Image (tube, rainbow, N blue to C red; front, side, top):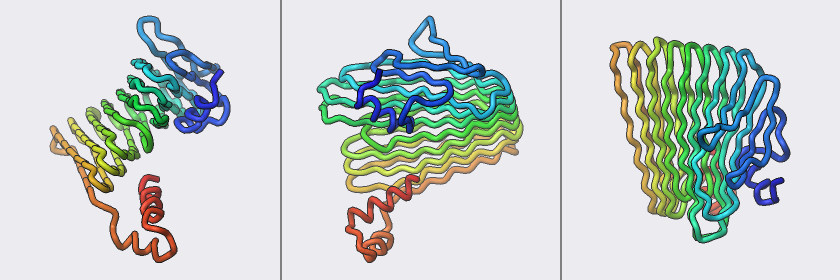
Amino acid sequence: MLDEIQKQILEEVADLHKVPDGAYNIRANGKSAGRNTTANIDIVTKEDKSGIDIIIKPGTKNESVHIPVVLSEAGIKEVVYNDFYVGEGSDVTIVAGCGIHNCGNQDSQHDGVHRFFVGKNAKVRYVEKHYGQGEGTGKKILNPVTEVYQEAGSYVDMEMVQIKGVDSTIRTTKAELAEDATLIVHERLMTHADQKASSIYTVELNGENSSTDIISRSVAKNESEQIFEAAIVGNTVCSGHAECDAIIMDKAHVVAIPKLDAKNVDAALIHEAAIGKIAGDQLIKLMSLGLTEQEAEEQIISGFLK
């Protein structure tokens, strides 16, 4: 059973107010805290290392899988390997995420390695949220690795969110796309205090008419640091777009590193990056409506990260 702190973290990272419908695997402090499978979705514990295999039958429609992780004890450090096998022609939603509550003086760390093997013409919506809380001096560290292997005609839409409380994170995403496959990524990120966050994306467009769109929206406050790297490799006729849009505040530091590698004359690759402070006219407009400067900033940031 989950305690109240764990339930609150679960709500933050997976929008769960109760046990979810459908398939799920809840991990709390390094152990299983609940699991359910369905006729079309099986979850199997790995025998050679920590983690699970999620097996989705071909043709599965309108089903979901929730696999949140909760750490509420200081000093826990774990690496978990989860593999998703998404059957041909299926259409599913996968909700992951990790929340850390650390009130101690030891660091807590979760490194999750997720691999997706997406079958022909399958569609996946993947949501991953990271969250940290707790007044302890121990750091809250999350280093997710995501690998995506898409077969012909498949479609993957990924929402990657981290907007509070994580002291250090290196988010690494790699993808390989076959013909007519599409990968969409929407990243939302906020750092404050002296937090550090790196987002590293590498997408190989291997099949004809494959495409990707990677969009990052981030806010860096105080003395935090963010690094965004996006590498798109076009090996055939394909299209790729990466966009980094960041608001920088106080004494923060933001770096955007684009890499476009066109290995075919018909590879159409685009990168856009914009880093800047909140526009003064936006603040003035909101303050003229009765908001304080801080309230106006919060409104602008909230709208920017939606």
